[in-house]
Length: 351
Ligand code: TXA
Ligand code: MG
Image (cartoon, rainbow, N blue to C red; front, side, top):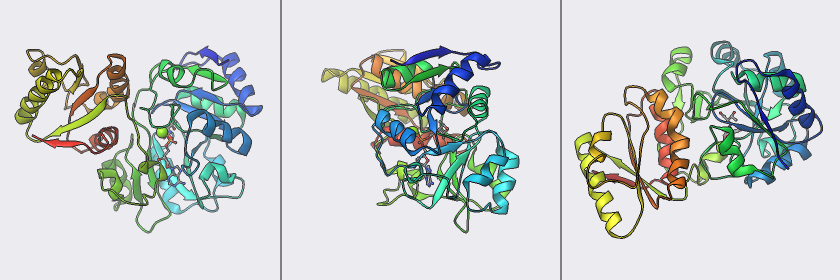
């Protein structure tokens, strides 16, 4: 049975945090909110507890987990050494949606890092995540709390849908505000390299570091051995087949409308993921079976916050085909397009 704990996200009730912390201290697995997405946590120093995470998610063993901490002091114990620019980034972006890949210390069991000689560490900004780490007095290893390959969960309900009965507890602190996962930045290379774009943008990092590289896998290049092992798997996939439609905006809406008609003709249920600027184009015939307006193109933060639940909504509406517009790959747009491209398994149609 999975315990369900509804909690106040701003002022978490201490007795509920204590209960969840006790489960973690006994080697259990607990889903909890962070500002990015919900995580599925276990004691990062206990290999057996961490194995339960992999089992519950059906996660491939070669995909390492991020270790979550709540105070700057905790980093020292988890890494072999701290490069000076790590300290700079921690001061600027922690707590927040930035994961630093650092040379791994001896305390971390192999299963957490999937045998790599590096470890990903982040300090989440969410009060519930912070309270849980503090009260449990543990570093918490936590991937996103979804079944492997499904869209990441941004609500407690998403977690229950995927993992009810498979984990010890869900702490439900309401919807995650950022909506896409943390940026994964490798600091073990001569030039810091973004392995996964996320809540902290390339532009933010560049302003602090001067030089930042972006791993080619981020923009969809098919590489045999991406450096964030997680980037090679099918990801963020709803049951329907996702297609990205790209090009000049007027042509995109026209193309999507034509595709809606064509697929409906063949008996498919079609969903469209649109933006505020284009929504009206789909509110006339041919009407998609489901329309989700993610937000305004001028506010990518809203689009990011809605993205994963939109993909799950398409499932609830039993969409066979999901047609999504692309957005500019600047700021948060880089993370949004990365997730969309992966959910579409690189099916891209040029309008
Ligand atoms: O926002 C987030 O990062 C969320 C919340 C729960 O913190 N967590 C999350 O974890 O998204 P997960 O496991 O779903 O994604 C972690 C990504 C994977 O692509 C993994 O391969 C990469 O980070 N990663 C973790 N440790 C790494 C390492 N040592 N070297 C390279 N990539 C690493
Ligand atoms: Mg994940």
